[in-house]
Image (tube, rainbow, N blue to C red; front, side, top):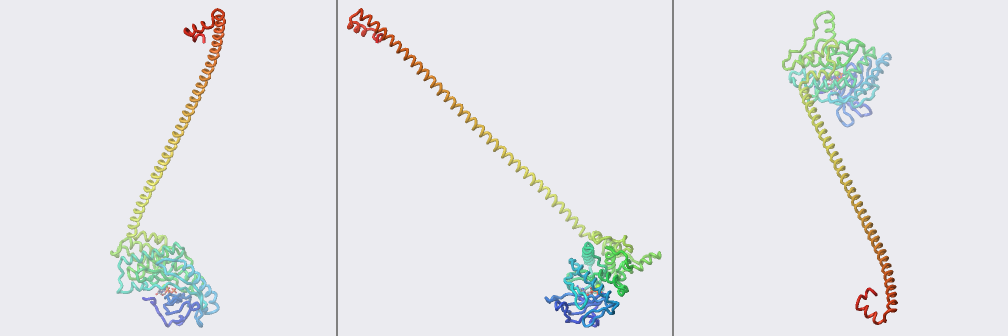
Length: 438
Ligand SMILES: Nc1ncnc2c1ncn2[C@@H]1O[C@H](COP(=O)(O)OP(=O)(O)OP(=O)(O)O)[C@@H](O)[C@H]1O
Ligand SMILES: [Mg+2]
């Protein structure tokens, strides 16, 4: 199916090709489908890209008049307004989701007195078409690949506190590369049925795909409800038909009759038992018996991913080990370098201390030498002084002696002169011991 499985150009209330929306930003090309809550069209945006437009059109309470969508009667007005409000709010909420396996919503707007959303156009066909086409034979590897990608998408929406509420083969588009894309989120419809008595008659359930809690107004719906629908979708892929509807199963169990559901485990040898057992578990009637998260399902069936996760973990461990040993090595090197720096610093300090010590010793030696020299000089001067003093006293003594000699001489001479004539005396003394007299 190329974006138009139930094309019905004759649907009277559908917008006609060429109709412009949002002041010409979108131009309708083709009507695609009409569900209980809205109409789907192919359109072009202002950049001439092909998009899908979903129009809020709960046909049981509205009709189109001169392009505008109006409540069918005054009694329907408030409910219609509430549905339009829910549609816009839910579209805005969903527009925040971004995942390769979830259809992208790139605009939410109001026009023609109702709400619209513009979606990415997914070129391909839906899963229902694919499995019903006898020429299309999905390889078990493709089935597993599609399921794993759907589980990734479901895990993503659940972690963002969103339930799809309408997972079924016709709400999974398969693009040109074989990737599944989830469309047609059912939360707005659920809200709308709660807000409107007129819509409460509309089934927001799909027999075979909806878990039994979807049939009970106000019952708890959780992650396991979406997983039930996904299990039913892949049950259909394997067996060629949807599982028995959940209400029939509940009443069989309540009436003590066997569950009409036929497990797939062990029936398809081309699939691993773990893969088949997970589908059976997801399809348990009572929520506590089901798989509790998309992640749990992924881990049960993805042997390849488990293997590569184990390898990735081993590689991570190896990398961590390498990082740790590198860190230890670097730390050791840093410590060693630090020690070397410290040692070099200490050696330099020691050398400097030795140099200073030598300097001090040299200074002391110099000082001592200077002092010695000074002492010697002192001694010398003292000696000189003493010598001078001795000389002086010797001189004085000599002088005194001289004076004495002279005195004696004089005395002698006077004595001699008294006893001898002067000429004889001198001649005699010259020839003998002259110095004794001079
Ligand atoms: N993004 C898309 N790209 C391509 N085709 C799409 C896209 N969205 C919807 N379609 C086509 O339009 C059909 C109807 O769309 P969708 O499932 O959203 O609404 P519905 O089931 O008809 O209506 P309701 O919302 O009332 O349940 C799909 O089966 C698909 O063929
Ligand atoms: Mg749909």
